Image (tube, rainbow over all chains, first blue to last red; front, side):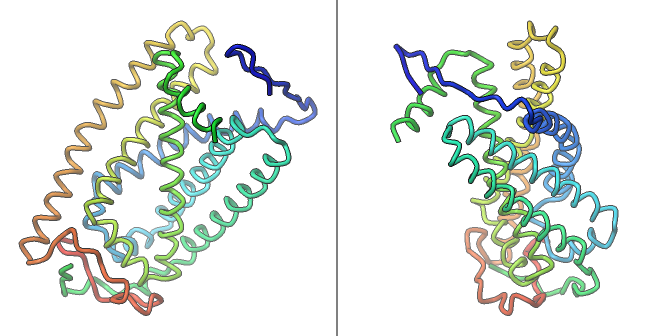
Length: 142
Length: 163
């Protein structure tokens, strides 16, 4: 990269055989529309209509007693994680240009995103509400 | 390091006007959401894998510091969502590019109209929580003890004050 009197230029190599960036661009827009409903809906339902000051594991068990909520949360998980990690990749690649570094950033982010989705997706699917005892009357004072 | 300082300084200084600040706010809110999302997802998975540890962590999330952070995440999600829709629409509608500045202002206005009442409501919920805990003789500033939730693989007979 060369800087001449405040003007920054750099040479970019465009791979005309790969449509990856084109599909990543489209994915960010389409998943963004999905997340307008999934993520903003999640914030409204869990943090406004309900409150995290009332959150208990029994509340989680009541919600995940229905496959509708399980599917909603899995959809949110997949779209939010992929959208978030691709966004982070875009930001990092705006500042880091060394291809030997960016390839490792991509590998690391892909692996971490997949492990996160598989781990949390398994947790949602396998969560059994019947293993959670009903709310005890005992009130905990911190 | 010097390039990092230059990046931060020029992000604020470059006079791209409203579009510049929309771009910066979109990036920062996105990174903030992702940071929290990763913690939130791995923590919520513990409701299945380590329910005792999950019970401890949701008590932790009732601490005033986390309640303030929750309002911040609400702000980040709302702004990122509204501005993201604006960016997507302009990407597919070049004939609307003449409205760049006005649409950026519109997004800030929409964000404030929706976020401010929600923030006031969330703050009142937080204050109510602290009041309930206080009346029961506790303090909402106290941190839950991890040892109370061992073994983590079990569900403990505990509910939060005011629940």
